[in-house]
Length: 265
Image (cartoon, rainbow, N blue to C red; front, side, top):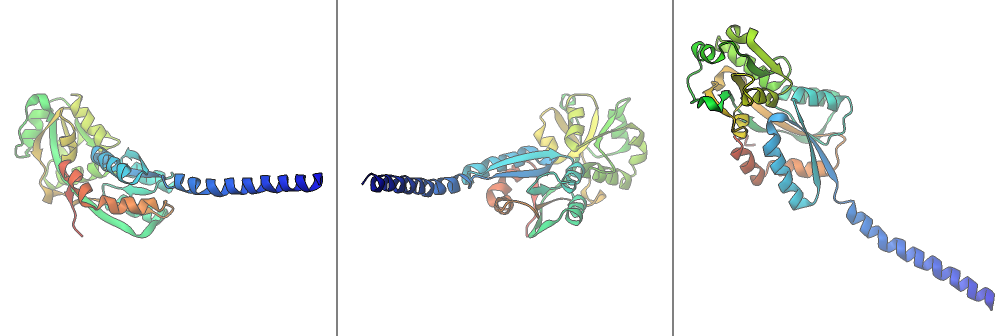
């Protein structure tokens, strides 16, 4: 009789354990839904993309982690194995580099936004947009430096050098250029008064109250400034959701407020 009772108690314990596991599994599955998403993005997208990310987090429950830097640096990091789900570059060249060396998910690459270049000066100068001329540059540079992103690697610097060359202004400033790792670093040099002039994106100028737009750079003087977005081949499935979210009306409104222009499909 004692043997039967013990056998029954053992069976009961096993049944309870099995039920506990069965009840816990749905809870674990539910917890796994809130995946983190890692996004590598050009520095010029910082404020607007962070705002888009916050909205996405509220609507989906997924956390978005951003890494902002120059597109060239981010592309190299991705190719070297840095864990990322999406990449937003400030030009197509660095996206092509990632595609060739790391791989992108088929059907999930698209040009998302456009931008333009402006010449900025510290806000205390109460600058107003003027025509870009050699005289304008020299009158503000005096003995100071001209802040730009890296002109051979970072998109903002590449576009800027191309524009100045096409406008016949590069030779007059090239020995005065202070090159920065990314466009936001160049912006900071002007905002803090360390450089009297800088060449940045219009969206950067809007994001920094300590600078004013001194002149608009003619858009025909350089290649179109386009920001492609792509899901990386090893990305989590949630990356595809964020990719589609970036193309939605809510995200478009945030980018437009920040000074970007949408690219319609």
